[in-house]
Image: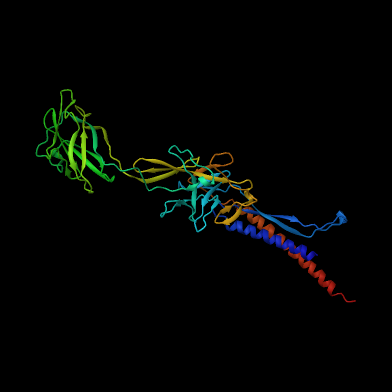
Length: 415
């Protein structure tokens, strides 16, 4: 009987060493949760047995229990590296033929160049709840979750049809000598450059050159790129006049240029210039106001995640768009989750069904961007446990050897 008792001890110690070895092997695995082997003694008894004379029959492994204490938090600086401070798991949709939702504490995410989904190292897509323009969730529950996708662009392109410029022209400026030449700065007094757009949202530069003609009159030459703008078919400059107080008296309406063809191609584009707010004063030339009514398509320039989990994308045209709110899951008994590998877990009958929510909700932790949760394995603690498990194994092996020697002695008895 002692053979089986010692054997159960050997098997239990071997299981514990395997568990510790698994923990140590994953000390650098992000989001990994260590396990602990729990044992129970084995006692065979009956109603007629004297409880003071019972001898145990060894030990049995009751289970390997996962320890969901929080791992060390490491700062990375990447806004798509996420960590949960407190309870909760990220929900990800696995790729493959039968996609399913898995749960993980590994928040190392990146952008899939093919689909533009935010995915982990295995290609599983991070799940979020859709939100409106104000970042308020518009759908909840497992059916409401969607893949987080980063759009490449934002906005609708619009051709510039009007430019407004408020400039102050220096009243004591000298009249330039020579014929106006945009390549010769001595033939004009000042210039302004304004970015405008064609119908496809491509940028162009409108340059206005200001040439003093007399005490109250200035000539304005306008170009888009190297192309001079015309009025009524003439490329002659537009004359701007001021009264004695420096207030503009002409033109009284925006300058309407003939439609021009953008260098990028496309249909001819009308354009007007409004100088109504301009002045002539004894102070340095200055642009006091500038605007244009065109628009370009914004390119994705950045993404951020706030503490409540709202993901916001920013674009080169100044647009900011709320893309979704990171979905979190929690369980009645996290220790009962089924380990799937790759730092994934799935629900089981022991863990209970997933309870879904978002960061800072009741029962869920807060979200940290630019941070990753590492493994919760303490190397020193595991090494001490490994030594103890090794001693247990050696002790049971010695007991087994002793039982073997006793049996051998009995077999060798001669009558």
